[in-house]
Length: 107
Image 1 (tube, rainbow, N blue to C red):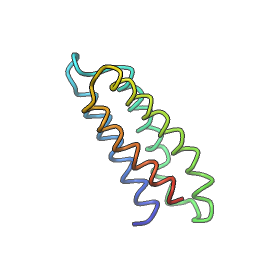
Image 2 (spheres, rainbow, N blue to C red):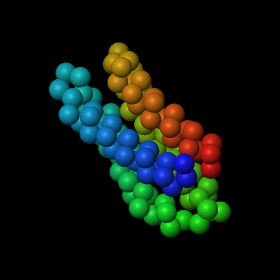
Image 3 (cartoon, rainbow, N blue to C red):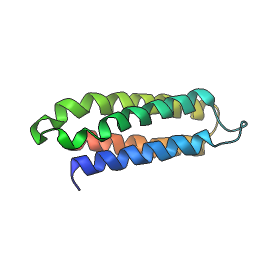
């Protein structure tokens, strides 16, 4: 699968995760973490349309900073859930973080 396709797939997964966490009931949802998830998904979405226009030779220089920033944002959201003893939610975020990390390594 091409980098651009994987980036778009990652964007969709981050968006779905943010939506899933936004729909959680008040006792489970952590608003600050949901805000961070939405921020990460929005940053990916901002680049999702443009990623196909970036020449292959420039993908690393353009996408690495974006992916690193999103990884950090998702990590902060994961820690908030883990600190609240919500390991299941933390594990879901961790899965998406790992996808970001694998994509970074492919660049």
